[in-house]
Length: 104
Image (cartoon, rainbow, N blue to C red):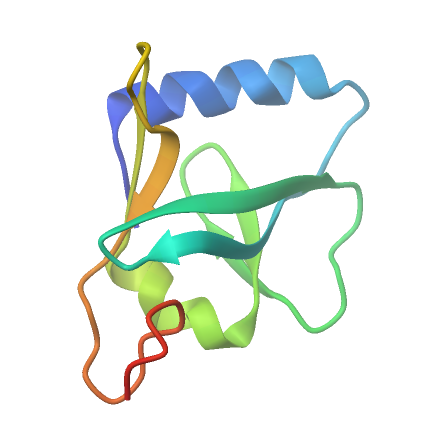
């Protein structure tokens, strides 16, 4: 996964504000398509059952197994401004099964 500098800054700020000592962030899917989606993220204080660990240099994501290949090629970005997307996730569309597009 590529995490842009702006997304890194935003995630680090979120981690600081969470309080306690979360072991990572659980990814519960996303709203949108592979071209632009809003990730559903939740801090967790222990590894959730059935989730895979995806570690970056500063954070661990816990992801459902069906998103493993998505995370390998995804980009997490953060935009600010009135008409911006905020934190968003994109990845290349997959013929034969894109988890958000429901196109097979």
